[in-house]
Structures are given as C-alpha cells and as structure tokens.
Image 1 (cartoon, each protein chain N blue to C red):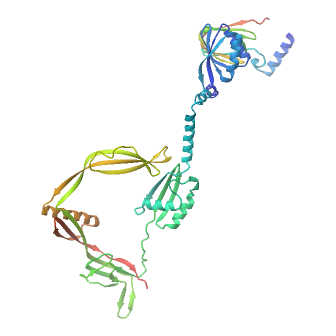
Image 2: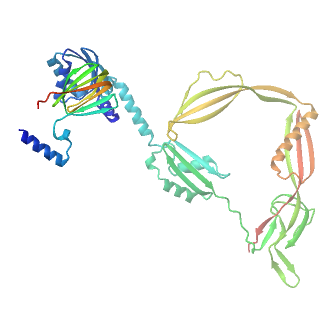
Image 3: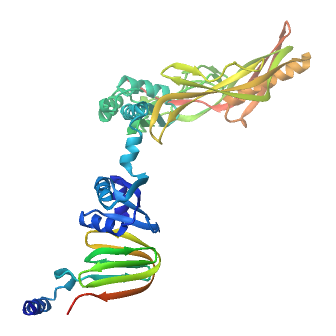
Length: 95
Length: 395
C-alpha cells in the first residue's frame, strides 16, 4: 500500500502536477482576514456564526470568528466570509 | 461575481429560510445532491437563510423532509417571477404589445417633411407640391420612396432648382433645396446692342459714347423706348453696327396715394393674452378647451407643432396652439390739417419702401383731395436715375 503511494508521489513530483488536483487533499486559500476558500472539502460538520468546522479528507478545519457566513457552497468548494480570527487544523489521518 | 448575479437574476432564485436541528446535515445533503447554495447566513441556532435557484428548490423540499427541517420562502427574485406576476394582467400586456406594434408600424411612414431652402424666390409650398407630385408626401410608406428617382424627376421638371437633396431620418424627411440663380440675359461684349429704357421718365441728360442717340433731353420716354441705337451712319461708310454705350439720366416719377378718414377706429393690443391648445389628428380636430375666449374682441394666432417622440421620430399628431390677444378699439378724430399730415406720412412710407436711393430725390410734390370726410394725399417723388439696359440687336 505504502509502495503504491510512494510511486504515485514520485510521478506527481516529476510531472509537477498540483497535488490538490490529483488527490483529494484540500486547498485552503485566505484572502485578507475576511474570506476563506476551501477546495476539495467533504462536508460541513458544524456551522454557527462564530464557529465553522469543515471536514476534509485528511482532517478537520476549524474556523473561529464573528458574523461568519457560508457565502457559496458547491460540490467541491466552500467560501466563508466574515471576520475570521483563528484557524485550527486537526489531523485525523492515521500515519 | 457580477455575471453570477446576473445569471441568478435571469434564471430566478428564491431566498428561503430553514428551521431545524440538523442544519449541517441539510447542507451536506445539498452538497451530495449537487445543489448550489449561496449567501448562507445563520440567524440563530436553528434558523438559517440561504439563496437557491428555482430548479433546485424542489429538491430542497425533499431534503428538508428527510432532515426534518422546515422550509419557507422569504423572497422571490428574478425575471421568471416578474413575468408570472404580469401573467394575469392580460389587457396590460396586450396594450404593451399594441403600443410597440403601433410604434413599429408608425415608424415605417413619413410623418414630417422639413424643407430647407437657400435662395429667396422659392417657397416651401411650391417645393412641397412638386414633392407631392413625385411621390413624397406625408403618410407615404418609407419603402416606396425612391429618393434618387424623386430627385431626378424634380430636377428634370424644374429649372429653378440647382440642387436638391432628400434625407430620410426616422419618420422625418429632410429636403434641402438650393435655388438656381435666374440666368441674366448675357449680352456678349462683342455683340451689337441697343440701349433701351427700362422705366418711364423724362430724359434729363443723354450722352452717347458709341452709337446714335435717338432721344433729346426733355423727351418723355416709355418703357422699351430706344434710347441709344447700336448703329452709326457715316457719309462714306454707310450704316455700321456697334455696341452702344453711354450715360442716360432721366427724371423718374414715383407716385403713391394714401387716404385718411377724419374719424378712424384704431385697434390696439391691450397686452392680455391667453393660450389654448388643440390636437389635430389627420384633419380631425380635438379641442382641449371649453370656451372660446374670455375676451370680447381678440386676435388669434395659430401655430402648429408636430409631436415627436425622439429627435426624428414624428408621429402623425399635431398640437395647435392658439394665442388670443385681447384687442381694444378706440376712435381717433382728426382735424383737416392733421389728416393731411397723416395721409402724407402714410404715402411717404409707401414710397420709401420703393425707392432705394434717396439722395437722388429731386422734387417732392403733394396733392390733397378732400371728399366727404376722407382726405387723400398723392405724393410724387421726382428721382434722377440712370435708365437704360442693353438689348441685343437681332437681325
């Protein structure tokens, strides 16, 4: 299993493909302190005005802030806007 | 972002609220069903508002039933809802369509002919009548108007037009006409010619440079009398034709008559004015006023105006503006002396319009004639003028 993963990683490195395209690893983009975009997410675990938890394939992204809203929700990406103060990453993937 | 908003507006979307304890589950279900949600805002723990497209709304209802949430519509936005709202107002839509159709049909005809003339002798009515004859008239279908053919026809028929241009702009036809200057009869410098009088008068001085003088000073000549003949008779050479030239000065009389009544009624505007309007649709007149006028005696001046929607889109409706000016009448009594003076003044006014050169006035004579309260003045001006024009000798 690990062997296959390693060879895949090697090929990707050689071809210089972006990882978020080839795998379902999330890509998190922050624009300023008021917009955050997560691509390749899996689902919304919790949504309050002050706390958003978003599930991804490798872990949970926890966003804290005030007056936050889910501006756009799509199949692949979610755009959060509001005053963002803290971002935690929780790795749930077992090594 | 703007394109997305536009798309949402065109396709229509609803602003809905969702109430329930499993809101996160609801959002994830939407994601799985490939529903695009935007502007999700949480008002409190169990209450959430979001926007969703019209087509996805039915799916959302199903999801809400599964996740045990309540769904309600807050606002409907977009063109599909707007259209739906007006679906019941059938007459409104029919009238809208009729108005657009009327505009479209009206724009196919000519409703105004604007004539611009450069030149003094051409009148608008004259040009208009010849335009009408050749197929350009108010109410004519624009497609039937062949501008080139009309121009050619008019140019062929009329000699007094140097250039004519027709431009169709909207429902407006702009016709510009340049007058051809009347060709003066050119007497070639080498041609033999006589000098002929062009006015009635008494010759004062005659001086023939070439040619033979046919009249003496003191002679009274009529229009067309030969003054200097274009031939010379020599003893040895016989009759020889020349181009006559010379100075002829003559006394020309101008007379005008004017009458003044000893009792005259005069009219004067009091300055009071009222405006009234009327509509004219194809010679059918609609008065927009009830009473004719408040004034006892008045002058009316009508001015018509064509209505237009855009700068060149005339519609076949005319607005008639009536200006009523109040008039006061009063009587003037003249004594005999005053009447004479007045009559003389009026006659002189008429004469002054005729005579261009006032320096050459030699003598002024006035005759009065009084007959039953009417004073008539006859004023005669004696003016020194050069008379005589060239006339070609025709053999």
